[in-house]
Amino acid sequence: MTAQGMTLGEKIRALRRQMRMTQADLAGNDFTKSFISQVEKNQTQPSLKSLMIIAQRLNRPVSYFLDDDQPPPASAPLHQAVAAGQLLERQGEYEQALQLYTQALDDCAPNDYRGRGELHRRRARALVHLDRLPAALQALEQAADEFRLARDTAARAAVDLELGNVYSRMGQAERAVHHYERALLLYEEILVPDAASDPSSPIVWLLTQLGLTCYETGNREAAFRYLRRAEALSQETRVYYRWGELCRVSAVLLDEMGDRRRALEYAERAVAFCDSTLDRGGLVDALISLGCLKAEEENWAAAESCFTRALHVAEENADARGKSRVQAALAKWAARSGDVDRAVSLYREAVRTAGDDQQAAEIHCFLAELLKARREYDDAARHLESAIAVLEKANRPKALAEAYSSLAEIYEAAGQPQAAARCLKRSVELFRAQ
Image 1 (tube, rainbow, N blue to C red):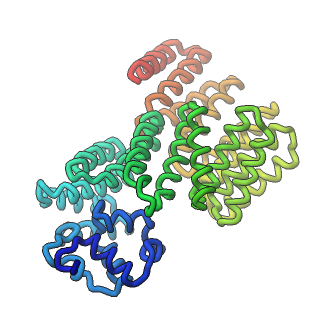
Image 2: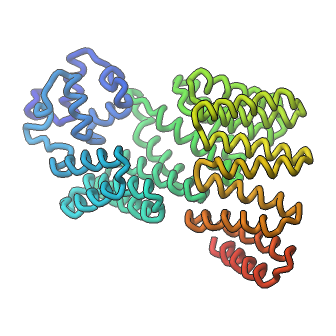
């Protein structure tokens, strides 16, 4: 077949084979092998920027792939809007990027389902950066509707993945799991039947994320099942994406299942992997996990060594969030060993160094419990109120209900029955609304 009657995907595949290149060769470091496979089958359309990279590797002008009645991936104005929006995002101008995507959406043809879906998806990403998460969810649902009309299964899977990420960020782990599982089904539907494609990277990511999120929901059995699948696929394909996180959470699960020996083995694997890949953020978490396991064995010297190194790594990389996590872990063990004064001091420092409001809210709650035990009710109430302000903004009803319930107990103990009744009523309303 000549280029005259070929689709974009057929042109790419024919040239690649003519040049004796594999899909992996054409993908290089810019794409995945599975993406090239989907493009060649016309299951997805590359962006203009992606097509320029592919054209350069196949030694052809972009026009070669776009002429002969082969429509471009999207209109030029749409590509210009997306490119300009991406530039604004890189500069941190998310509000301006959002306005640009919204204007482009108004100008986009009603039947350009794929283009409209991509713009809604871009709007959602800008809204996430602006911390307008409910609006981001709405934009992603609109993107899903457009991609459904376009029959673009790969794009639908990507949107479900992003919906899961937003729900996870909002602390709604059950809803996050629902979307992650739906994304996994869609990815497997697209990629697994094709032996020439390489589905490992997105599926390993999703299996790992599902394990982590199921753990947050308290569904330990599902968490362990997904993590074991991720581990098996990683070892089979040698795609060790998020291997450090996988091993770290597996260690926690194994410890909860009573297998301390294997838990330590996995925790040490996590440390070794993060060390070898220079993943400093992951290394801090892995060292904390290993330190906690050593502390449970009452191997305090080894535990202290892990915590000390984690603190050093966080400070060395100016990682305020990591430093706060180490201090919170040390505070936990100080409290468990009966040194409440040190625990309170460490939690106070952890709050000051917290990398974001969500992390600070969690520490405020821990600190409030210790202060309540010391009968420092006014201080305890202030910390819980700080946590509640963050949780209200993030729309986390379950965590809010628990925080209001704890605050009611503090007010009751402090002799403020009216305030206690008000908080208890709010807690009950939140529990019922779930």
